[in-house]
Image (cartoon, rainbow, N blue to C red; front, side, top):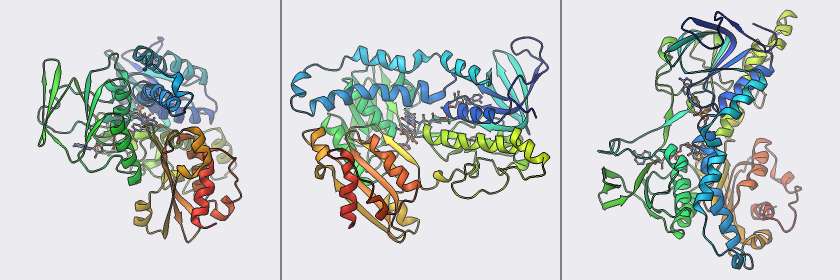
Length: 504
Ligand SMILES: Cc1cc2nc3c(=O)[nH]c(=O)nc-3n(C[C@H](O)[C@H](O)[C@H](O)COP(=O)(O)OP(=O)(O)OC[C@H]3O[C@@H](n4cnc5c(N)ncnc54)[C@H](O)[C@@H]3O)c2cc1C
Ligand SMILES: NC(=O)c1ccc[n+]([C@@H]2O[C@H](COP(=O)([O-])OP(=O)(O)OC[C@H]3O[C@@H](n4cnc5c(N)ncnc54)[C@H](O)[C@@H]3O)[C@@H](O)[C@H]2O)c1
């Protein structure tokens, strides 16, 4: 163990990996996505030598094929629509989206799929990068293969798995052979197809249906179940379905394809209710942990399964506490911000157990800070993963949620009251756009009079969410929230309406 970040030991004399390259670091992070980067950064700040192993682009899915490019595709349509929603401004907005400019701006937000900037950031933090596909070969040992060469890396302290997730393609006859789009093609496309069939009713399906409708595609969404955004409040899915239909999207519920065939310049999607043809088909039916080819079996774990962790992000099933996992691969969270939260905690736990501070404590015979179970809301325990997850769906209307839905709260055994108000009761919302739509929902624990969850559905509600998150995480009693006065005339006055509706 070294006491400060710096060059780690290496058996290699050359500058790059060779066939006999063997390196040793305090911490080895498998996967350089946004989440892995954060774990590496926090461990490094704690005085440990760290290497990140990355098979594709440093920055991962979020930077190049997920959050950033998808939001860049969605934003221009949202801005145009916001202007059109206000009389006086609407008259000044007479044109359509400039599709070429939208795609060019998206390219820029995806750094043109070049990770030089993120590599530079790694270098600036003193974290080393090894490119290639990593596999565990046993406790604390990783082998990396890249362009015919192998590097063996030994971790003195910890290995962190941060390899993300990959899309699932359902077993529909002909679908795989039809070479469907996944979220990668949808977020990176350089041309807009005339028409698009989307399979799925979750976040990717609704966001990409919105984006491609904005860009001029004729979009059909085939949903297996009876609602969109099934894990959120039902009102969210209903509003998003209505919003998509208003924008010309054909949303069909209770529809599962029976066969998909690519013919000439398009695809035919057969369903029990008839055939849908389109230029492309996008599969947006969920993701699975990217853990199938990671050597998990060498340390007693199941390849392909989520890498299950405890609240310190440690893989408890592996003895001696050297294996950690963060991000999508854990099956615990599926957003960048929640993955990064876990990564900050994992990095801090590792630094506290093995870093310079831990050394000082151990020398003084004091128990290292992150050993053992930590109290709720400790910086070494991912408490927010249970009951305070946040998410924004960038559809129109937007959906922003934190914590438990009413159904989840009831199922968890809480005494619950649902409080709901329309944005039409808020002066600031009427100023923001001429036709006010949307609603705010609170889920209140009536025994403790604190919030268990909140959902906002409406235009540009994303920025309203953090106040709710603070109330949930801070377990702020509603009578105290009464003293948090929202300015007039802002949309945040919806908080006042909600508390009045509750009876304060
Ligand atoms: C279309 C879309 C839009 C999204 N939009 C949002 C959003 O707006 N906001 C949000 O919070 N979340 C969003 N998400 C979710 C978000 O992208 C993920 O939660 C996030 O990328 C997970 O980060 P991660 O670091 O765990 O995994 P990834 O970003 O997948 O990173 C994992 C990295 O590990 C590397 N890797 C994998 N296996 C190996 C190996 N064996 N050896 C070496 N390297 C390996 C990969 O190449 C990759 O770079 C979106 C997802 C999709 C699909
Ligand atoms: N704004 C954001 O935060 C954002 C945006 C996009 C994606 N993401 C994350 O990425 C993850 C993946 O998104 P997603 O939309 O692919 O998954 P999802 O789990 O949100 O939705 C999957 C959808 O596919 C349906 N489905 C599943 N199997 C099917 C089958 N065999 N046939 C037909 N339909 C089927 C489900 O019923 C559901 O409607 C999500 O967990 C989400 O958190 C986040």
